[in-house]
Length: 255
View 1 (cartoon, rainbow, N blue to C red):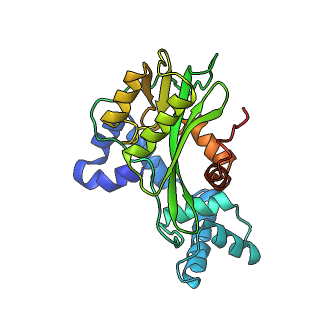
View 2 (view 1 turned 180 degrees about the vertical axis):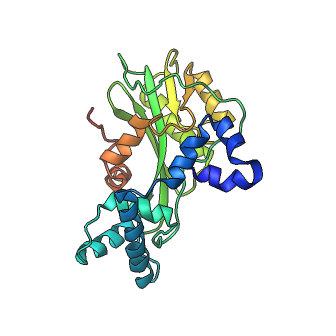
View 3 (view 1 turned 45 degrees about the vertical axis):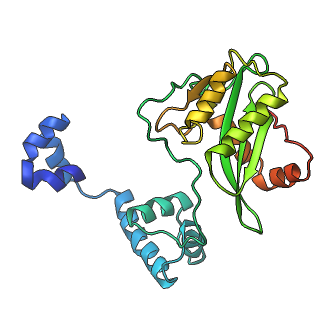
């Protein structure tokens, strides 16, 4: 409906409805329909949300706005506050710098997704998943690359660095190959996201030299590398870092 309202003066209602395969009568009925109780409630909540956000110098995020409304006796769910703040284009202040680890590769052709969310393996060295994350430490932010064997859920290769470079992921891969005690990984599927580190020429060539097949997650799929990302969620990176830097070895995560 908002799309038709935006473009009706230029194209007309009927042509737009014809393209969208919507009856014009449906559009006009929606225009004349009175606002629902939910819409009316949303409109009143938006006023309160905007007020709280403004009174707190435009720095409150969803959590703090919701808690302040709760303290004032306004009954509303946190997710609803988040949705309405997004509609109002309001957001909280973010301290420090935001960090991004996955930068999509600009190459036109990418390997296919050979995993398709099926994170299972019948034996070691059948499926590896790789990912990157960052860890906030007192000296600053460090990046961590790791490779996990899906069969045992064991991190077979890892590397910590202060820079997000292609060698970071490659060093983790080299450790994974070394830890397996063989340079012949024929039949292994190596799965990762679409980051430039994993589609770099040196990285893909190293996989090919070892006989491994490269698999890359599909575009717009938040679960395309879920097993590797779940390791980050289930175990905060800080214990990993302290463990690895102390020489205790890589942790093993349960299924």
